[in-house]
Amino acid sequence: MTERKPRKDAARNRQAVLAAADDLFSRCESPEGVTLASIAAAAGVGKGTLFRSFGDRTGLLRALYEARLEPVRKAVESGPAPLGPATPPRQRVLALLDTLLCFKLDNRPLMLALEESGSGSPYQADHYERWHGLLDTMLGQIPGLTDSDFTAHALLAAVRADLVEHLAGHACVPRERMRAQLANFTAGVLGADPVRGLANES
Image (cartoon, rainbow, N blue to C red; front, side, top):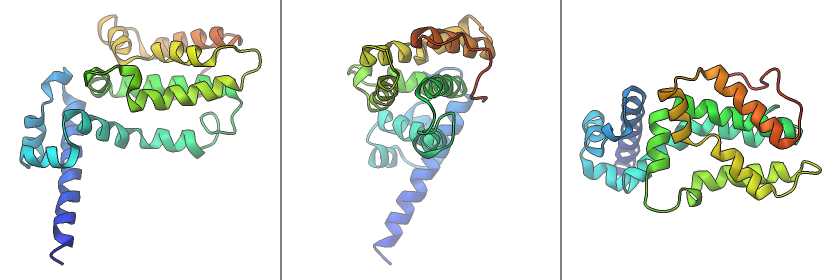
């Protein structure tokens, strides 16, 4: 029993921290305002608990991102069309980019904080490499499409968090217009017909 209690406390504290961070990022106007100190205070734990559980702010951001992303990850890995692996590649690429855009629109402060965190290249971050690798694979399955590696980078650039924030937060582009613009841009890159309706409603 003496060995299990710390593990239970650690798991409980971890969930409390993630819940507090989730709430703060959902309500904040600027990601810089969500600090480790504010998260620890909201969770009712010491800052040392955050460091033990997540290492640093970037580690916490990644953990919160993964928790929020879990439904999307499951849909991509084993779900039905239009995100699941049995979907034709062109349709799947369109659906994936639409889903990423909607996810970033719904999580703007968190995604800005995550994509701006760290001192290394954002293109070497685990979350970026995951989506690039998946897109690269999908694009490689489209006949006649060349250089899937670069094309994946170019398409992901269209859903960068800073661009999404500029369009949604500063230019006040409506959500559905952004989705339609992205869909038609992607269709053009893929050599497909313009998109009249979005396959993946969010």
